[in-house]
Image: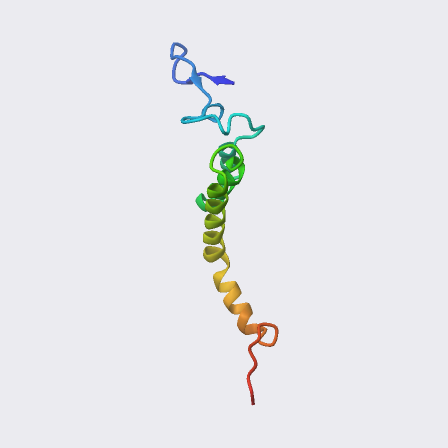
Length: 102
């Protein structure tokens, strides 16, 4: 899918950035490239990177890409849920092994 620059009719056609990959071809064989999915869903940086590494591990980075995805998911967990887990820990002391003796 090529698009023309709308500024003038005599400009050269530009390649759709979602249909090209710079530096390899490990995403080109996917039905939906991670970048397209990430952008269309307006995902944040860490979530997007986790998806990217999950999608490419079998064709590029192997176990290291899985470790990178886990690292980004740990960042999301800390960023979005650390306070919630901390609060839950103190709201349910018996469930979490905290027992106050009277």
